[in-house]
Image (cartoon, rainbow, N blue to C red; front, side, top):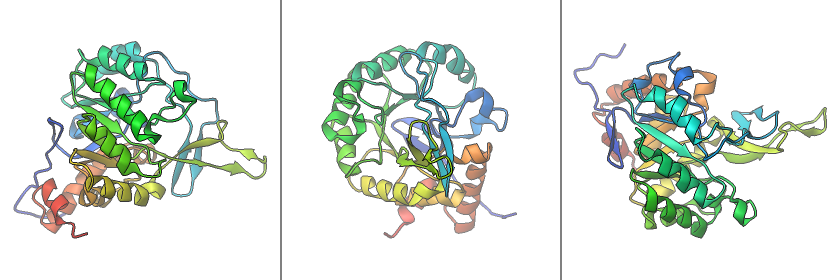
Length: 307
């Protein structure tokens, strides 16, 4: 056990939302009722919900999960029950907990995003995370997040109807993520989260076919952490918005790397599938790291990096 004469201040602020710790749950791996069976949700800085669409989405056909070296592939396809059921089921449970709720919003067209945001404006949601990795059905299936102009159109439209802060979740499947980040900032985004999953695939050499029914899936886990760190580092030097960084975080020291790269907070996703208590374990490990190294605040960590 580490003995210390001080307790580090782990509080951070993301677009006016106060967090008691910089560690938040990542969209896709958090469910209020299920996660609360393993740890006290009120210990995390905020919870980012699974994707919410205007109507129920069935998701992709199975199989849609595959293990990979250093991570996993998923092609779940943002399966969700729709915004009305989300309000009745998930938010009704979360409203009794003292933790900021960030709703991840999904859509196949700009109107979808705006519809969900308008329906959630009057709820206890603290912030919106707009998933611009969704395919734009009106533009032949291209992801909103792969083109600066398209990303800008989403941000501008959502900001026009949102009464709460808007965070844009950036896709790493682009040539230059900085240009997407700049476009989001220009149109008024309040914060950024990055990165989403990297596109990948896996082949069953005995069945001679893709493991995933959808062929391609999103790669997450430790294998993508160096890419995520690089992108956070680049975006931090290009925009002034708060950043929630994530991608492969498994330990408190991993979280510290993202903070040094320029993130204001970090999200934990795949780690929670391996170890359900990962979010709070990482909080404890980060606090121990801060005490051991003499960091009194999260900002101290962010300012310490010499690169």
